[in-house]
Image 1 (cartoon, rainbow, N blue to C red):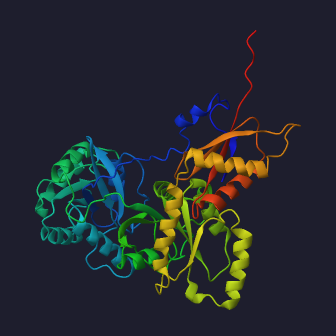
Image 2 (image 1 turned 45 degrees about the horizontal axis):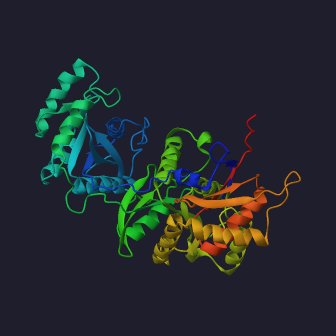
Image 3 (image 1 turned 90 degrees about the vertical axis):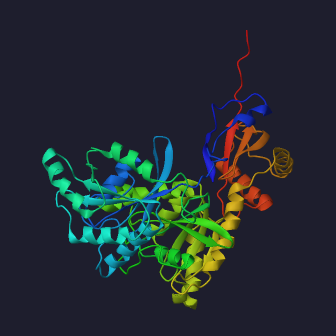
Length: 471
């Protein structure tokens, strides 16, 4: 990737300046600490996602005035009174759900079984229903702390009605209004009292590499996650767009733990999306920005679409390592393979460095090959070249192919340094601006010499400006 801007203020004086450059903001040295998990459960349309957003202090979970928007179990990091913990939003739980809703309910049950504490959310304006009572019976069988939350308590009248929820047998109902924030501070104090300092064994988040599954709707992202995990982590259905929120899953692969995020398929530009799709698009972008490597799924059985190219551009702009997974390979015949190669050469010119693998999420074909591809891409993404080695190589390259003349003068490259990783970012200190074609030449030679397979490479120029002589 070529940066078309100057780095810093455009001036430099000596080679010591590179030590203080901080271009990529990669957050190296970030510490990952295992955190306890709070699950937010309840029947559909009681305000679970609204309460999750209130706990987080930001709009993360997708919220719309339609029951059943949340379908998977989605994890977010929260912080209250200096303590960090994970919050899991879940879809509506119903004991006798059928079809798609049955899969949704199963995800909520998994959250109940694996959490360190649970918020059971009840609509105070409706009161206790048979579904709420069934949820209480299920939760009583576990030894996990449960806090009963009476939501939608917007006035004193509803507060009096909510007192009847004592009948559920979970103790005092905490009365809140997730929409307006009423009572949520006191609720969070109670949450900290119920959560353990450290998570139960096997439930904590402890610093795995982060992988985003991206692509257009119905390309097989959730099916791939379920195949990799060996169980049903994401809701899969024939209806395109089943996944709305990003879904976090810890998966053991190749002797390592990976954190996979199954994202919503992007149909169109975020600026053109509306309703649930708009917020799902924002969550997908956030999930991508929080990841380290992206697996971009492309339906190999049909021509590459504008939607595919838009998502690839999103990944490339984010600076993440990239693996292209051509899915549904079991449906590809010889003629389609020939056409696909032509489409790749024509349409994927922006990411020729991306790792590629042909898979079938449905049959499991070659999905194991994704692990070495991800490891190679991440190794490149983390790679650092020493300044001495870089400048020795660069001197030879420039001697063989000097930069073109600009304004009657030939700019000189004085020295270079790798200013950052994740992705690898290089800065060339010069006496004049370098043409875009020459910067692309430098990037290509960097890849030939040092690798960087599966990772973008950024090349920036910092031009020395002449200083006025003192009179």
